[in-house]
Length: 457
Image (cartoon, rainbow, N blue to C red; front, side, top):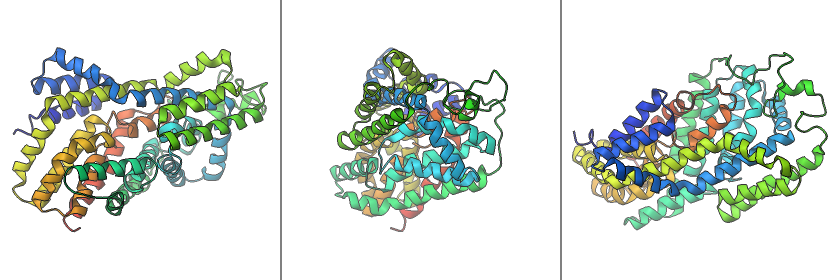
């Protein structure tokens, strides 16, 4: 019974329950943190101080999201995103499945080859929503496609964000007494990537294959005189004429496009060399400002639009950092592992299940695979050695334990990113249309492959 009353277990259960009851993620996070702290014996006033003090953990990420939002708004104002979406629609607009796979591929590039993380989503996805509605695409399949691309590549490909994650796994396992290299982790983790790909295909071809209409979507052009549209929904701007939308008329669009492409290249280059998403987004934004794409008098409006697009994600990430600090302060992760060890009884199947399930709980709360690895490695590596798991099996379990829960967590950028684009017209629910689908189609395959694979490698 000690597991059922563990602060982490209670807190994550409360968080998921409140979110499923449609309470806002931000309020759910705070309440779940306070309840977990109370169960862990921490006074509420002290818990709130720890919560606020932990905001700095994700401060850089939050700042980068604000800059990325403003950058995305600037790109949208040029009409470039509309033009790219029309090309996308022309070449892939005949098949919902191919569109979803193209989204997954684009998201994969954002993690490895062009490491801009979720920056492309608020730029690329909103202009495509009209196409999605016309094709009656179930946006839950699009959410799964984007989440796959944001997650699967960095688990198994040692480049870009993938190199960072795999190196964190290797370094923490080595520090915990089991020397492994980046290539050792890569050789094992392809199984996890394959499991997620199977989950993606199941989502596209089976679960969300049927057409779905979004009657309340504001991206659906009514054809009425009042439908003036916006740069995010190109079909609603046709009445403006071939010269462009109202926002871009009278401007040198060729120059704007060239400067925007240069800004996009700068974001990629700075991200590759500095590993700082905030700095790369700032450089791209500044280049668009001084290149004349974002006019000085429009700067306040563009920043406000950036806050509108990504501000809530930034705030949620701040609170998620505080939530993680509260859970650490309770010391309940150690207790959870010890309680699970008592249930294992030397059975490797039960041990593999407990290890992955605890990783699922911890990551669901923290919302970051990268942050979960150091928390679990020092506990799991000795435990796996004691249970007789091989080094490859320990790598597989350790990586799966860290990756589980990232897809499906209300406070993870793997889910917040897709929602920021798919909900640009207010027709996509974060919990029911992003978190639940990604949880079911990715976490279940990851658990099955890691538990079974650990018995035979």
